[in-house]
Image 1 (cartoon, chains in turn green, yellow):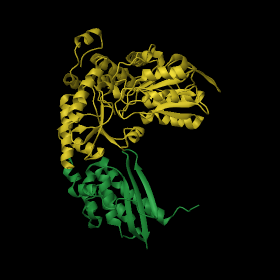
Image 2: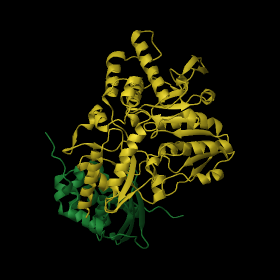
Image 3: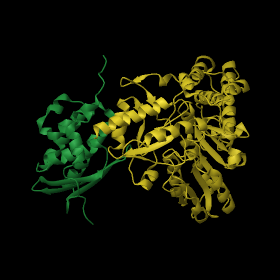
Length: 153
Length: 423
């Protein structure tokens, strides 16, 4: 079986480029409940994610950092999606998005993924998948830090 | 390809070799990638291999395969001869006076670690200093960081200016009697700077008794290296960046230093006599070659040296710089481009790092890949260089002897596609 060539327009959809140019929730949350700094050691992508929780929900989540269009758009779309959502939904959303990045067609059609669906084409570019996952990894770590806070000295 | 590296072959190529002709020798260059003919511009990471190297590997395994320096039998004799013959070729390539001073390694990284461990652990202590430069590849930084942590030595850094050139004026401040080792690259992998190693050697010698190690990974494929003329103590390089196989490299060291050093690893091959509680070491270079070595790799690296010698040891640099000069001229017209490294072409290797204002290097790399053009994006194992320029990553096109002006044109066209998508 020959696998058709992945196409660039499936990767660089307008919605991705739009989030890249005008990212949502860029910056730092004032007085955050958790703050996570993650690196992608192979390529140098970097994200600083800060999170504020109110009544068990994501009250505010913001990011700064540097990276390619995929990592920046994914961070923008992710923050948009999870703002206002219960914190305990985060692992399931992250898992669903990871499935999408691994080529799961059903996950790619899942409306609960919001704008992140535009990133479905990334699964055809395996070396770029880690770029798309970085933001969710940071959010999951931040969520864990809120749930199990590191005791202060 | 052309025949041996003999005088006749060299004489018939009195003019500059033609990349169009050389490319025929490299099977991997003749393929389609994503439906486009491949343009391979990631040579600073690894070069492609000529047919003669692939044949040498095949011939070794199909005819001569045996362990070296072990058996009395015919195959072992042939394998040993091929292995030691390759050592002589590799020694000659860098002007090493004696092949016994050339130790086979897994590559440049392995050679540097060998010196850091076998020389450094014996000679460095609290308060001693190691001189490095911010241009170094991680393979010439991290082994010294490990050594410093174990011995209490300090790292000192030679800085670079905005052209990617060492700030030599700082040397008097950086080098003193405390300096025990200076470990510096001959050619930068991240910027392509051809470094003035001779000038540093002079200053280091004048101010210290430091041992000088040169990382020659990017230089050995490019320059007519002469370790004696350079006046250094160790020179490490890799086979795979000069048309040879991966997993093989060589470390040249001054005989008196190598002889005084303890072994790097223990095992078979590196011993003279083994007793219950102690052993004595084999002569150079075998003292540093514990275990069955990468015999086929060594044979392949010897064949790679033969190939490059047939191209002309003194012509490779000119060939590269001619193409780089064309590439710089074409690339300068790309909107929003920033090109890193020395301004003068004669100070540059075949490496051209750049960024585009419109798109991140990873996006650039993905898009040009879909156009069949292979370049690298990232920090190029040189995060200190990236930090100097305040950029987390660059795109890097790196050329070698088989690249043509067409390849440059294809790159420029592919960058046009990047600009179209990110318009």
